[in-house]
Amino acid sequence: MLYPLVRWTYTLLYAPLALPILAHLLQRRDSRRRLAEYRGPAPGRATIAAPRAKPVAWLHAVSVGEVLSALPILEALDVTTHLTTTIEDALVVADRSGYPFASTRFLPLDVPWFMSRLIETLKPDIALVCETDFWPNMLHELAIRRVPTFLINGRISHKICALYSLLGRFSSRMFSAFDRLIVQTELDAQRLEQIGLPHERILVLGNTKYDWASRPLAQTPHDRGASRLVSGSRPRIVVGSSHPGDEERVLDAMAGLDVELVIAPRHVNRASEIVRMAELRGLQTTLFSRFENTEEPGIENGARIDVVVVDVLGILPRLYEGARAAFIGGCFDGSGGHNFLEAVRHGVPVVMGPHVRNFHQDVRTFLEARAILQVQDGNGLGETLRMLVADSDQGREYGERGLRQLLLNRGAAKRTAEEIRKVTAGQTR
Image (cartoon, rainbow, N blue to C red):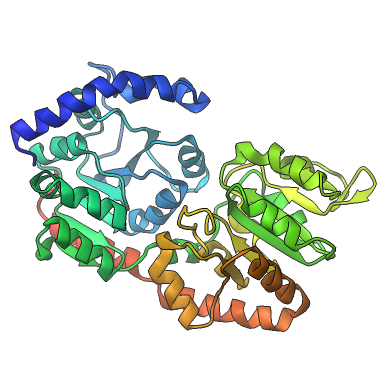
């Protein structure tokens, strides 16, 4: 836990930022709806009902991907789980995941009295922090209550390592709140040791996204529309989790080809913008929400649809099924890329750009096995996608090798759950 002077210095520096942070959050519609959650549960409010027949876990996971990567661990632990996050999309996907969360909500601002209220309300037996989101007062409040706390599926980027290394003892004390820091790769472990964490608290157990990608897909309200879309007869290319710039590259690359594009932007509020972008190129374009309510699949206003833009959450993993190829977004603009395993699970050949720091080790493993393809620029993307459209046999070989790699790398979730059970044996309430 943090030294008192260090903790209160951090709090005094952080607290004045709370109002500007709230003012910024009020610009987001999802934050306005959930504003009260940033203050933690109200004093005196009854504890959230949770059957104590099972241990109670508090999971904090920021992104959609982090929530989903934690599910196989939760299932292996067999716990009652409360989820906190910082974005509405993660809450929506969590509610549609099929996992029975006891509650889902935004994380309070990181001030002691807000975090204390939340912990006293949830009364967790264990706390799980997924991948990358660390809050000093949150960890301190867990530590003083002796709640066993674990980093799961951890990733320590170069930037995070540099920042926390500069902060010296503050960082090592903050991270000492974790009973175990369970990370994906040896590089993540080396970075934690560089920050000052003892080797014996760090474990490299692999990436639980492989386990999640191997699970049966949860049902969603949009499954019927997804089934109609993937049953089309034209070659289909899926652009997953696209960022600004990705859509233009693919639309230009596919000009003149008889293919159907499915574009799923990272942020669905960009859907209308992407529709206009495609229509300016003379392509018959529609939103997925409109497509799934169209009587004749693949046809709108008497014309064949060229581009479907996904404007609903939680449906992308189903849309990869049967695709001729998949391009994963966020690999050109420096964002670090997104989860390509959702496509690999369907045996679909995957194309990624040059910037893949979020999945660096996984991408390297798949490249060495010739199980995915990587390009350096828009021209390379166009050539590769055109090759996969023209040569379905080569694409099928890449897809099969990718699926084999996915199946070979499962098991991190089970190993993580076993380690948590071993550490908490006799400790939980």
